Amino acid sequence: MLKKITKCCLAMLFLVWMLPSTVLAADINTIDTAYPLKMGQTEVNGRTYYVYTNKSKNIERLIVYSTVVEGVSIDPYVEVYKLSDDGYSYYKSDDDSAGSLNFECDIYMEPGETVCVYTRTCNHKDTVVRYNLHATVKKYNNGIVNGTQIHTASVNNDMQIFTVPTTGYYSMDYTANTRGSVEVYNLEVGVTEYGDGFYGDGKMGPMFLVAGYRYLLEYSFLSAEGTSQWRFIKGTTPIEDGVSISKIPDQPYTGEEIRPEFYVYYNGKDVRKEYNGNYYYDYIHNNTDVGTALARIYYVFNVDGERHSGYYMTIFSIKKDMSKASVKVGNLVYSGKAVAPTATVVFGGKTLKAGTDYKVIPDKNVNAGTKTATIQGTGNYMGTIAAKYVINKANQTINVTNEFIKNKSSKKFDLKATAPGALSYQTSNKKIVTVDSTGKVSLKKKYGIANIVITAAATQNYNAAAKTVRIVVTSKATKIASVKSPSKKKATVKIRKATGAQGYEISYSTDSTFKTGVKTTTTKKATATLKKLKSKKTYYVRVRSYRKVGGQKLYSTYSAAKKVKVK
Image (cartoon, rainbow, N blue to C red; front, top):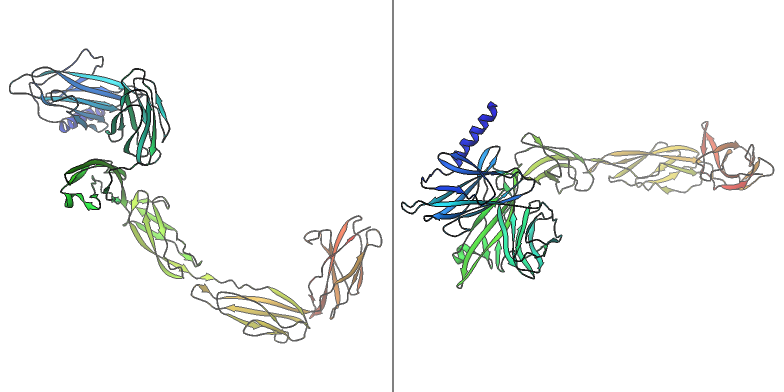
């Protein structure tokens, strides 16, 4: 309870501080009992304020206006304050809607909102002024129109709440079977963006609408049976020909209100300097916090006796300057491409999100070495940070066949090795093969195995590398002369003799690719019989020769396979 009382007292003190201090004793404000809306009253510092709360679930339009019943009222006005958790804050005032003797004020209220209304009249000498304060409410349906959908109505006065998908200039196409008026009201800013009368078919605009903002499309008809259709279309010339507004760049967040400098040009010339004109912010919204600020600019100037004036809606972004953030950048390995390194950015104790809060722009120099990346703010962040990182050398790959199988009569051949670095070659057994500086291998007419070590030198972007290639010098390859199935579960294989061969290895399988179910057998003769085969199955058979060197069998390459249907 004590907390509630303290909060209430603070709110009232805040109200006293925010509201005007001038009190005119002769002011007499009364609620006209002819109107059904009843507003509560509260008194602060000798003044009477009228309080109203929107207790419905929809947006309401509270209309407060006066009627003088005694005396003369000069410059009357109404001031409206809205209640929040922090107390009452100024919302709007009005004094020009109902002539010089009275005031009128429209207040759009969200569900649950409370307003405090203060009205004042300036007295003429000692004349006592009496007037009635009228308060009425109009309730609205909470419909949604996204983008360019068509809205229809068949009542005398109606309203639609709508949003648009993208920020920009819009116009309205409409059809109507009666005369009337239309108004587009910005609920986020609390101002009318556009208003006009209509009849028949036509087009209205332009108006600047912001995606995510809620707007009221309100219209009234002169006849009770009026109908209309509205369609919002994006893409309309925003201002008169020849007039342009300088682009407002992103602004750094300061925690205070930001009103960046801008310029209005006519045919490329500054209106203030060249035409003695003027331009300024008519209003500006959301220009303190990070996000998108909405501003309406007013301009006026004369050229050759012709007056030019108008409004221009624009937006600019307020972003946090992350140029002082802490950055750690990971190293890379050379790839030949400009690859952005990973970066961890901490700003104000918060780890920012890559792709959302910032992007990493890599160094254009893609060679190995120390580089500089640019960390650039995006989204709600701006500014750049230069961060060092290293592109390490990549490991080389030497592209070459791992093994070559030759026979004593084979000719000189090229290893055809390739790599980024310069290549050099070294044989392990010069009695078997030799290799020159270009990678050409010569055989010494002896059976055996030699290893050739290929070395690739380091380069600017690659580490040194080495690879071993195996050279096998053995008997010539052979072929299958024939393969037949003379009886059940058997097959006879006849082999062509190969020079230097000391024996043959026969490989067979029901799989033509020799990946499964492979069996082998060896023979020193040119003929062999395969046994225990599966009847009615087709077998594939291949053969290779071998020669023993130092107790190790050195095999030739396999022959082409032949197939046989087993009996």
